[in-house]
Image (cartoon, rainbow, N blue to C red; front, top):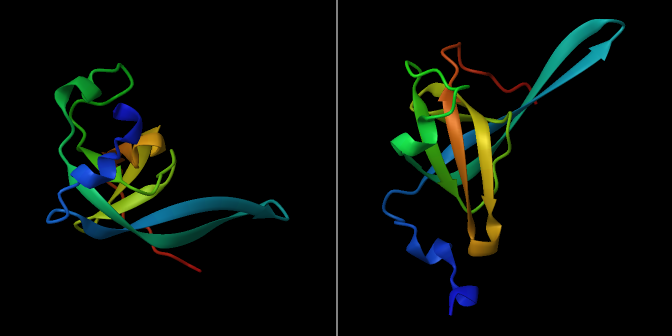
Length: 117
């Protein structure tokens, strides 16, 4: 019964929107560091995370967090732009066996990353 369960069937597609996910790669040429920022569009459902997910010691309680649900896996260290602000993926859970992934993202409180590729 549960082996045929696909959670993507349970997504509320009225709340799924397309967001820009950015990957930052640092390179160094002649000891000069350069950031390469590339992006892709990903359909996600973004919500305020459940309080249980915000109980670890490494999280700053005054910081803004978002739970990101997507059929495409998002990886730790990637950034997602939500309402004109960047959030860094700090915890990625791979539930692809069930048709989706869940990520916890933390507000960067920095200027928006601008893609250069």
